[in-house]
Structure formats: C-alpha cells, structure tokens
Amino acid sequence: DTAVSQTPKYLVTQMGNDKSIKCEQNLGHDTMYWYKQDSKKFLKIMFSYNNKELIINETVPNRFSPKSPDKAHLNLHINSLELGDSAVYFCASSQLQTPNSPLHFGNGTRLTVT
Amino acid sequence: KQEVTQIPAALSVPEGENLVLNCSFTDSAIYNLQWFRQDPGKGLTSLLLIQSSQREQTSGRLNASLDKSSGRSTLYIAASQPGDSATYLCAVEGVWDNAGNMLTFGGGTRLMVKP
Image (cartoon, rainbow over all chains, first blue to last red; front, side, top):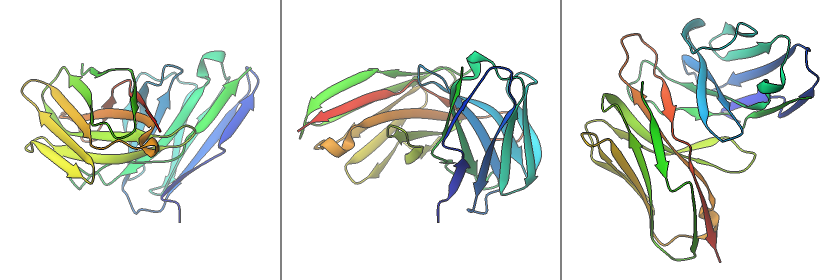
C-alpha cells in the first residue's frame, strides 16, 4: 500500500542512452513532482504537474521530458543521457487545492550514467 | 530567488542529548515550512509542517519553530535516540504568482546519535 512508488530503484546506463523512470501515487493527489538530488544532497525541483498539466519547469534541459498519462502517474523520460545526469531522482505528490498540504515522496531512483 | 541554508551540515551527539537544528531562508514570503527526514537509500518523510501564520508545531519529541520575519526555523529534538540518526531537511513553500506549490530545500543536516 505504498503511497508514492517509483521504479526502478537503481538504474545504471551508458552515456547517450535513453531511459525512463516511472512514478505512481495512490493518494488521490492532484499534483505530482520530480525532484533531483545531486551528489551534495541538494534537492531541486524539476517539474510539477497538476491534473496532468505542466505547471512548473525549472531550467531543466530539453532532454528531460515528463509525461503524465493521468493524475496518478508522472513518468520521467531522459534522452541522450550525460554523466552529469547521475543523481537520485525523487517523485512526490501533494494535493494542490488543499493549502499547506505536505508533500509525500517516493523512495528515489538512483541513476548512474557511465 | 529563495535560498535555504541549514546549519550545521553534520552533527554527532551522544544518546539522550537534546539538540537543535537550524534552518534559515532569505525570502519571508512563504506559505509554510516543512521539516523532512531522509534515511539512507530512502525517500523523504515529512516530520512537521508549520504554516506561515503559526509559530511552532510539535510531534512527539520533535518541536519545530518558525520566525518568518527573521527567516529562521529550528527543529528541536528532545532526548535523542540512535534511531533519530538521519539527514534532516528543511524546505519552504513560497508564494508564487502562478499556481503550483514549489519547495526550496536546504542542504540538510546529517545527524548521528551515538549509543
């Protein structure tokens, strides 16, 4: 009964490849997010989708393309992977229409690009 | 642009001590401030959320305070236990013109509680 689940947990791939990370939430939330945590442990928002519509896109290269087929899913597709893409990617969700609704995070996907 | 800073970056204490983690932010126009806990290889768990109109929130041995005007928050952990060892992250949700709550995170404080 995991609230926010993302797969895979680990992803090792070579430069230039294309990969996807999937995220699903069963909390009934209307908003989902992707955060990137770099090697220094700083978390930064990448994208936010509300009811399947993109509402936040924070200076992320075009190689990153989020896809939200429905409110419960937000997948992250990355083209032409680069070494600098190595990080832990966290999916999160919240209920935007409820003020001060806390974010619920998935366990993260550790991406290693070699 | 909002910036969030956490001090100290790392902290090691013996079991049983009371401790304080600090968080500061540069833009006081916030909706709320949240404290998260991150365990190695795990996601983030929300510990406490303080709304901008509140001064503090308590949950068990945790107490978080918020001084919005000075851009500061503290997380107080009473009677620390080895199980409290984790990274604690502070994040603020800002007031933006467009819809979409967006958290800005601090770099975290890595806490180790020694038995």
